Image 1 (spheres, rainbow, N blue to C red):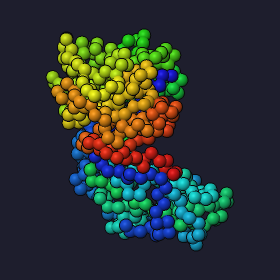
Image 2: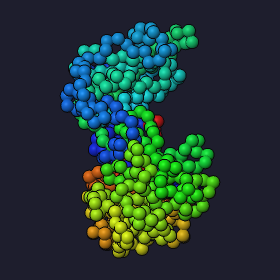
Image 3: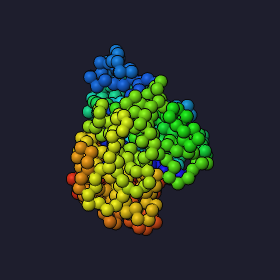
Image 4: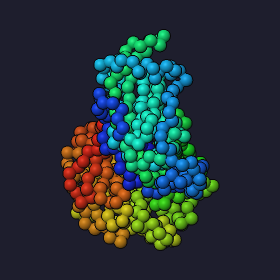
Length: 494
């Protein structure tokens, strides 16, 4: 199958701070429990669910309207919770016995210090045993001002908090640490204690008094993936299920002979439509057969050509390549701009005005001082700058279907300069000759650029950029500086 599909582009979500670290969160192992952007709101359909409104627990929001809700809770329910039908009913008594001297489990989720948006998914508690096959777990949640801790017992390998309890908790406990203590033990097949309770491992998380905005749309193979037909699926923040957002046969302007697979895509500002590369499914694949297209993703109009895109602009899009880039500062009538690359993979950086009639307003952005070929542009939110990937493109294969296929490559930055471009300069920290850097993305405030990087500009591992499992995500200041490796690159088990 074409390597086009698995574009590992980076998307920044909201302005909420999350735990920066991954890895084992076994904290205070022997301590007691303690007391301690927007996406496409209509594009995914269905209801938004019950989201807390962040106003002191006076209501919940259902499909955008605030309705009455129960008052905030002031304590946890008093009785223990049995996590599965097979959890022993005497589990609380078993954990009341004499503890052993074995170490506590490694808590994988939540990470210690995690800050959850108020509309986030209900917490999922996950842990790994340090030794042995523990088969009974106690999870204890405490809030400093609550008199009663919440005790959960399960013989499962993880536990997700009850959704109704999560609604109560996120409505009632904001900006207060919620402590999580986990112990494990081993029971025999007859229910007798084979290994007494372990030491406690503890972490804490906090619920923010604000929500994370937006929806997430992602690429997916249809069915079992055997036919190589790509489509878009998505979900909203806090939703536990996914739904189809756009399938190839929904696209009204598709070529029924050639267009059967949706690939790399970008949501337009406001999220009512997506622009994407479109081409044949796997059994008809050949090199460089994917060109740009655009479609609405709202309920009832999914697949239609957005009203602001002229037929002439669409015809031009279908001759250009690359992962499209937009800026919210250039997304109004008379200035609906998309950045793309040329049809011949020569590394020319184009701008196109989507709402202009014939002749369509278009042009090439100057990149003075950069001898390489441009691909994978990203547009700053303020509309002033463009960061892109500069490839040597000397071997004729480094750019494929409008995106980087192999290194060496560095990140460059140019001014937008009212569609003219200008002097190109290397982005300091993301133009290291020892690495190949690609897939850039501006942070919501344009202060940072996140990007993918892989070691080696010419070694086989470094040259191949698409779906390279050795690649990692870094960030750098937009003005340049030291490259910062994200701890999220590490396995939770590291």
